[in-house]
Every structure is written in structure tokens, then in C-alpha cells.
Amino acid sequence: MSLPETIGGGRNWDYRYTWIRDSSFTLFAFLKLGFKEEASQFMAFLKERALEQHSSNAGPLQIMYGIDGRHELEEFE
Image (cartoon, rainbow, N blue to C red; front, side, top):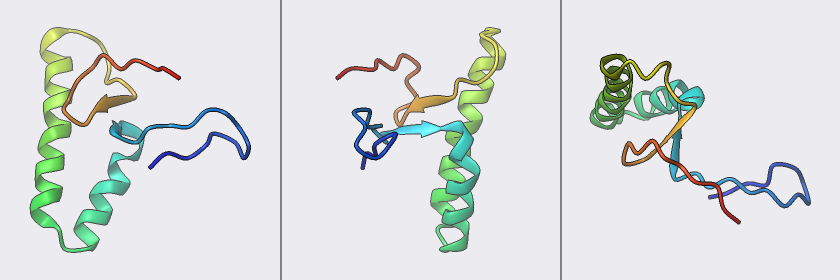
């Protein structure tokens, strides 16, 4: 699902990405709904992103990643 940045605006965001900012809400929702395995797998995904940043000295986490863990995210219209 994509939502416009502003009502009537031209920028819509594609949510086939993992926003690090929103990850805690995703984990909370999984756990609250009883999806413990999904929460565990998602936490493992996040841990992998943090460890790859740490091991490569690439700096801090990006603000978002592809759902497959990809780093290179192109914006296009």
C-alpha cells in the first residue's frame, strides 16, 4: 500500500521496504497478535542489518532497507 505524502500530493511511498524507524511498531504488532515466529524472524532480519553495518564499518543503519535486505533503493516516478 502506498500513501501520499500530503493530501493531493504527487509523492506516494512504496511500502515494500522496511523502515528502521517503524520496526518497533511492527514487532509490537506481531507480538500483540500472537505472531511470535514472525516477530522472531523479523528481529533476526533487523539484527542482520545491524551486524552487516558493524562488520563493514559502513556507518550507522540506513533509514530503510528493501524487504529482501537490499541497501540500494532507487526512487523513481
